[in-house]
Image 1 (tube, rainbow, N blue to C red):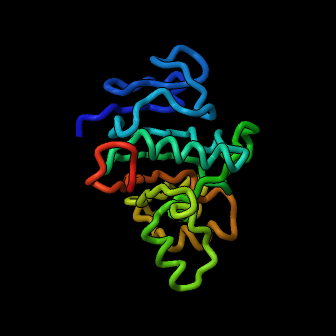
Image 2: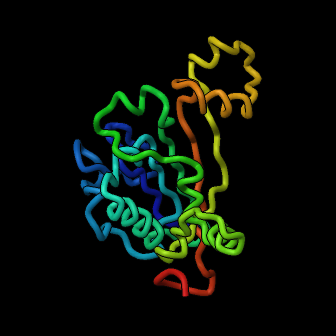
Length: 196
C-alpha cells in the first residue's frame, strides 16, 4: 500500500515518514480533527496513528461518529489504524479533564459490519454502528498493558490476561492502556467513494 501515513493529534511527538497533524503547536498540517471534512482525498490514506488522542475527541457523539466516518472515507481498503488510549479505570484517564471519551475494544467492534450482522441475527442489543453509519472496521488486535499497580500485586512478568481483566472489573488502576489495531474494510471493486 502506498497511501499517505497520518499521525493524527501528534502534539509534539512528530514521527518520521508520517504527516503529523494537530490543532495546536507546529505540526506538518494544522487541523482540528473535530472539524469536517478532513483535508485528505477519499481512499488516499494507508496508515493512521491515534496515540493517546481519541480519548480527547468526540465528547458529542455525532462528532465522534464523524471522526470514524472521515477515517473511513480517507482510508484505502486494508488500511491500518493504530489506536492507543488509557484504560477508563486508570487514573491517567480520569485525572485529565480533557479526556472526554471512553474508548474500549467492544466500543470499536460496534463499527464492524460483520459483527453487526451477527448481532442482529442473534438478537443481541449491541448498537450496529457500522451498519447505521455505512462504515466498516475490523478490530484485528488488542494488547492490554498492565499497570505498575498490577505488577505490585502480581510480580510474575507472565501476565494472566484473563485474571487481569477480571480484577480490573473490580479494582481501578490495574490496566494502564489499550493498544488496538483497526483494519478498514471496503469493497475492493470500488475505486473511489468507499463501499457500494
